[in-house]
Image 1 (cartoon, rainbow, N blue to C red):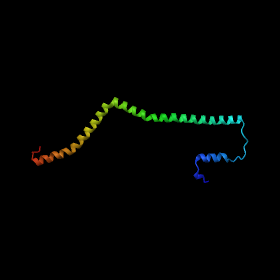
Image 2 (image 1 turned 30 degrees about the vertical axis):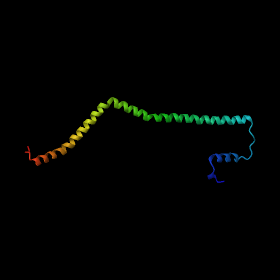
Image 3 (image 1 turned 60 degrees about the vertical axis):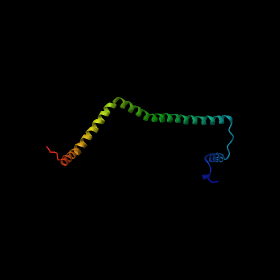
Image 4 (image 1 turned 135 degrees about the vertical axis):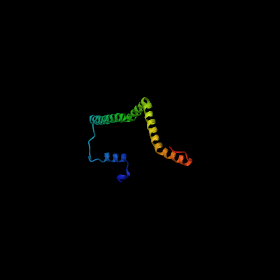
Length: 118
């Protein structure tokens, strides 16, 4: 049997049944209880780490929610100021653009229709 063709459960069963310790004596009840307590203690540590990790992951997951809510509050309280700034910037950009383009267009129209220039 090739190790690549068996599943993890089958490998664990084979490894457990054919371990390096050929003969082990049977465990009495106290040893069995100690083994159970040790296993439960290991599970408790693992669950504690999973709980702490889940809490930290939850806090990290709340960061985008806080950012969105803060942004909404800021835009609700300062929205008019922002819109005025955007409108002023757009108006000044449009005026600057048409200032350079518009004078040439006006000159062409005056030449075409022969209006007297000042």
